[in-house]
Length: 138
Image (cartoon, rainbow, N blue to C red; front, side, top):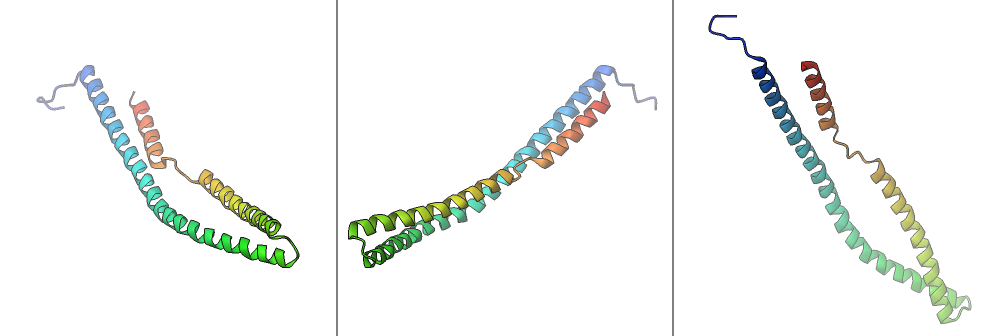
């Protein structure tokens, strides 16, 4: 140690350590914010196309289902059903089939959402490293 350097007091050292830890945690919070923002931007970007496609598909599916009900109704009337009975049965059959298909898509999508990784892995690992450094410094 040179003559111009003076030993720092414990108070100065602890104050410096507290300042360093405070700065470190501020940076960790900034990292967490950036990581959350990145994940939200990705989810929103992916959802836009899904929403547009969904709206268009709803219209197309509505027209298609109407055609299915009408076609099945005609077939049932050709088999001897009365018009009201054919209309009721064809509507019920189409609704049950489409409902089953919808249920399978919804359940598969819910499983995919449950498995999606929305954890803040970078921030978690970084905070764990910082906590170890702080423990070692005391």
